[in-house]
Image (cartoon, rainbow, N blue to C red; front, side, top):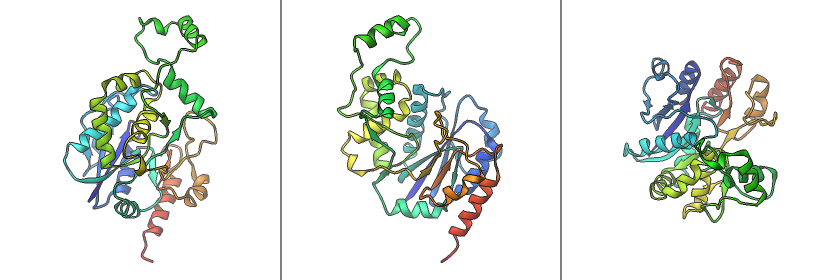
Amino acid sequence: MKIALLIHAHTNPDQLARLVSRLMHKNIDIYINIDAKADIELFKKNIENIHFLNNRVEVVWGRFSQLQQILNSFEEIVNTKIPYSHILFISGLDYPIVPMSQIVDFLHSNQGKSYIDYFKLGSDDWSNLMKKRFEYWFFLPERDIRNNRIIKKILQKLGFKRKYPFNDAYYGSCWFTLSIEAVEYLLDYTEKNAKVIDFFKHAGCSDELYIQSVLLNSPLNKDMVNEIYRFFDWGDKGKSPKILVSDDFPKIASSNAWFARKLDIDVDTQLMDKLDQLNAENNEPR
């Protein structure tokens, strides 16, 4: 059974071409969804033997478009009717740490399992931030009175909060590896629950809230493994992980991650060279 590897990208065509060249494997089909704001032809001219997805959207950070692009990509892959075991989802700024054969073997040995980062809403600082993204309206039409700054303050002072559409709410990273069963459940749930989708259209960063909440409240929750095999560095405590450079290589190499995130070909190509060498060494017969 094959694996579908999904990449979302919007920049750096040369870096994406290099990434794709490192992902090739006989049991992997590669699908790329390019942000509709970008010129897809710049990416197509350097990349062959993969599938460029058609259902593209203009993605705006924090808005529902981020989640919509993921759902569009999943639906297009599922509609191929190819019997994949998993969809492995990465960005164009990720880079492999281990040989793809190692990932393929692992997933083939763990049919039905999904590897997804999730946290149940609690009272910690991150939970309080995520609660705000759930509980208050975001991205309403300008004419909507709830956009008014004074009205917002009044609602908050009165303790008014939107009611969660789930018994338990979860959040986490949007980079994951889902079993095909989980992807099909997610798409079926989305199609049948328009009111829930409307709720998330007015949540902040719904791509980090919706998928975790759907799957952890589903009959498949026992198959959700809280591990994504990604190396991040949030050392600067920003909204995004820092750009990794060659000095980060020892930490990356000693991790159990499959991919490092984020790399930038315009900042440091030596790290990619080092990871390629590490891959080659790990791929040698023992």
